[in-house]
Image (tube, rainbow over all chains, first blue to last red; front, top):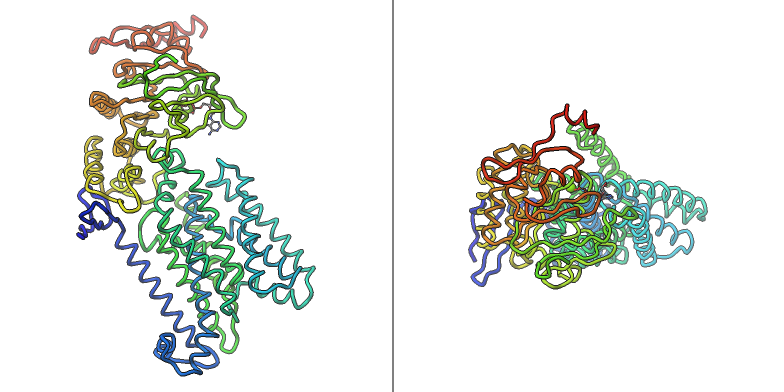
Length: 356
Length: 270
Ligand SMILES: Nc1ncnc2c1ncn2[C@@H]1O[C@H](COP(=O)(O)OP(=O)(O)OP(=O)(O)O)[C@@H](O)[C@H]1O
Ligand SMILES: [Mg+2]
């Protein structure tokens, strides 16, 4: 193997690894560095999260326990109570970051995120339906979220039209659908028994409190399957799609199929993330933009966005636990506050440069 | 069909966007090894025809045939290695550099385990040199002038290395010298054995460079053949509704269109 310099002879950015038998891999060292850095931050904060609570533990103890060398008491607290929550947080953040990167790339718009496009609301409708109508547990909630998200995806795709399933049109249709679903969700809440309503409202703000392995499992599984499929399998096609349908088609990308697969994957990631933590707002919107600013690379930046999402979400969760001593905020409140501020800033700067 | 041996041809094409029919029952053949230029007024369906020939637009009826096979059945990447298209408008992703954009033309030659071969590198360098954008390699595309940008897109299409190349208005935005440069480049590609199809608005350039011309109006092919038979005063008036004189170009001997003076046109009531 022979890594070429940071820049090829043609002036093309990135590093290349070539093997003698003709295989070659091309990547951006900066993007890899950003991804690794975000992942390190995410895991580090995850360890801090596991260590904090009514029974605080130092990071060294947490790591030792995670590696299987802790006391039985520590082991119970870490592996059974706090690790599921941290793992759910990491997976939810990663899923949202990845889904956001896909949506923003497909819509070619920094506002293209599941919150704006109505998919989070659709997943919420599914979950509320399950909680209010059946009072079901984690598995039923996850199924409800996936069904709600996919159904919304199908409706938005159908209304936006086969050839309009990109850009402005998808966003406008999504905003409309989101508004309708918000109304439906409100109606479902009024129909709920008071105990169910309390559970539903907490879920709606986006919270990781009391998550166990059953809650974390669906989003972890979705990420394990869809993550590699999307990042490795479709990343390059997505990059071509950013140049417009005609250009991508001319380069041999089966545009309709690629777009449908990417949309479905992103909707599923959003839905399972919502099932685990509720519709945590703004992570999907901000993570890809932050990642992009750090990598300074065009294109969907899938892997960096995914790691950035995980880092953002656990950091927000950590802040939510620390903000008021003795009183835990739902993580969705923190991401909402930070993300809302970011959105305003985005609108102002983008308006100045004339992009939106 | 006019030419049974053409690699690329369409028969009985009806082209429509949703319910709006642009062209009906159109037969077209691109002669092998030709430099074919399509001319016609705005909105007559030139881009639409090119998009159908490149399989971007599925005809409502009729078939496009490439190398004896209906184009609809071609695998996407194989098609992209045979037939390249420069669309009339494309989007340069924010912040992308010239070299990176041109390198995307190699996509149909790449795969998951073959992402950037030495061949890719060589072809990208050559394509940038051929279009005169090598010096801009590191510049972001969104900071280039319209003409520079146009040449970058042409470089990307070149990097695709297809024996058939469809170019939709490759000379828009270019100054006269760069227009000639791009047309010279097309002529060179044509001499090297590629079949080039281009939509051009300048009839004089078309007449000078084309080996075969197709004149369109309202979604129909009005005339086709060599520049001498297509670029005549009668046909230009019929196709563009512009009275003119056609003289012999003092430089190349090809037809040269000189629009009638305004006074003459006003007098004739057009
Ligand atoms: N995506 C589309 N959806 C609907 N109608 C379209 C679309 N693209 C083009 N048309 C219509 O089809 C007709 C032919 O357009 P086309 O782009 O083929 O013209 P053209 O000959 O290339 O014109 P120009 O010289 O201006 O590029 C026009 O009336 C145009 O409005
Ligand atoms: Mg056109």
